[in-house]
Length: 246
Image 1 (cartoon, rainbow, N blue to C red):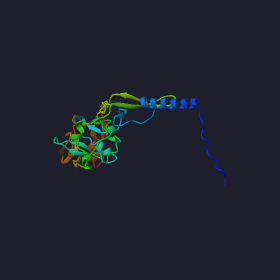
Image 2 (tube, rainbow, N blue to C red; image 1 turned 90 degrees about the horizontal axis):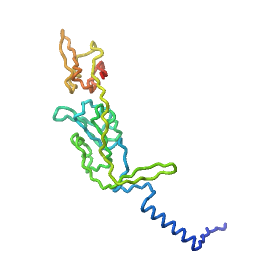
Image 3 (cartoon, rainbow, N blue to C red; image 1 turned 180 degrees about the vertical axis):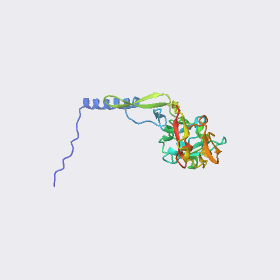
């Protein structure tokens, strides 16, 4: 049989023991006052989130041009347009499907959808996760227990946590994107079928039709056109296009 050697227990003299115990007490006191760990004591502490954090989405209906772009671009099929009392369609979000990619926020041409830093929302059931337009307009009620925020600080040698008293603002002001105006135009009027689908989907009333010499022709009032692009998407002949005017 092989001889099994036991690990020898180190022996320290009184001075060495005193040094080691003192070092342990100092380390414990330092960690209690200024901990060096990356642990965040949630919910009394919160990590400082960047301004572009992809959280709960708010909606400003007065900026919406009914382009439906948010619903078209959503990869999770979480956004549906619902008709409101003013006969306009506004987005609703099903957070049971939403993956918080914020493609809808980035693609909104007028900045009607706004991000927040809210990420810990509690729902009673799956049906409640369907957030209707009116719930997106008003800022949600937030119950907070945090007294300080924590930020990661990267130094030359290591990384530490910086703790400061105060509360991170969940609602940030995002600059409105520069207005780039587009209008819809027909590039091949001779190919128009006169189906009037474009006239039916136009939310701004910019498209109308007239009959000239027995032929129905479409007219687009560029002053009323918001450049939403719905008519371009629905045109059966694909002869409508968006043209930048400024």
